[in-house]
Image 1: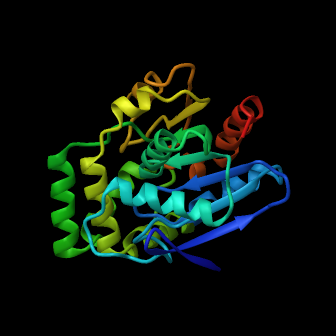
Image 2: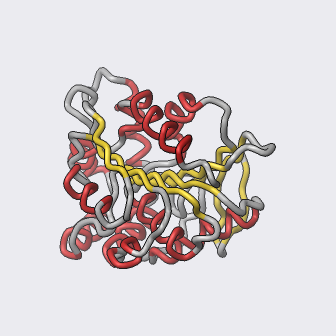
Length: 264
């Protein structure tokens, strides 16, 4: 395990590969830690330096008191990459991780050379929706709303109690700190990157699971349409986390895109 104080918060991360390989950075979704990328990374082979990290309040990273701003999350990853000496990278961001990736790309075009935006958007949800979720989590924790979240995350075929992986990801969600979860909900509530994402000038691939209940394909497509020249792809038989349900198909899209966009 590796930890660093980045942007004032202790961040848990993993840095593998190294050498002169291009750097691929992964930023994960709300209520998860960086283990959600295990299967996808296993499909990519050894062509990249891989950097993964847990957002503040998630996994083994420090949970500062809620609420958070999206600038906090962007500053965390920017500081981490500076600590690691990363000067050029591609970022794969899922859900809120994709919002963070958009924000970092807008702030640091010298650093972010390509984007894979997975099941995310320039703006996600409404203030009323996020406020309701924040109130629920800060009052009673995540467990009472976990089943509803999992329905949006995974397809019915995957979401069964006899699937040990599903049970494990449910545990990952419910063990997320209330401050980390609700704090990040506040960051999402207040983030609207429509104009900054429209101004991005870099290769981008936007991916959506065909059964995503959190950021449906049409929403992801609307983000792709903001970025000139971006690609939009739908992965069959996947919900909000295609890197878990369909890692082989997801990796094929990511690898093909990065091969074409390898200037990072």
